[in-house]
Length: 195
Image (cartoon, rainbow, N blue to C red):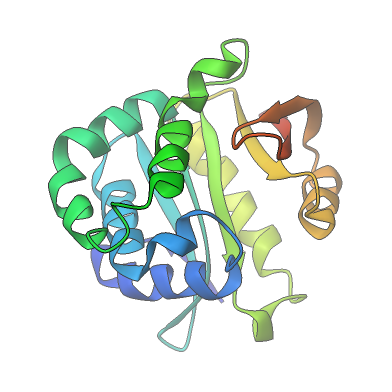
């Protein structure tokens, strides 16, 4: 088990894990090309980062976050929008997907009292789950947030994702409130306070 910061060469594997393990998520529906652009932006930006677990040269899991989500979105739109847009080309005419993209981009405005930093995604390949990889990656993620002078960060998790909710609660996250990002779909907001 090697827990480390992600590099550019890891992007394809990270996007593949995201698409397979978070297959019901909105971003997965936008395709691997779009996901690769998102993770490229996360790795290249100074206000975001991604931690991976590597086993025998293979990425088995990742956790990504931003120290300021609003600033990260602005960075993404300024530096990666056009290449990401072209990877969406067959879906860009789907009004429902366009609406969801806009909702995601503007949801940080809904929670002004919430921490600016956010854990965006965490996933482990199915066959490697239950081995403590997520716990180890989260410890490194918290360390990286602390190194960046972040005192707290949030995570948004769907109300129906019981295993994820249990993981966050067991890991010391505190429930803050419910939020609606996509219509009537309820998500929970948790915060983690770094000691």
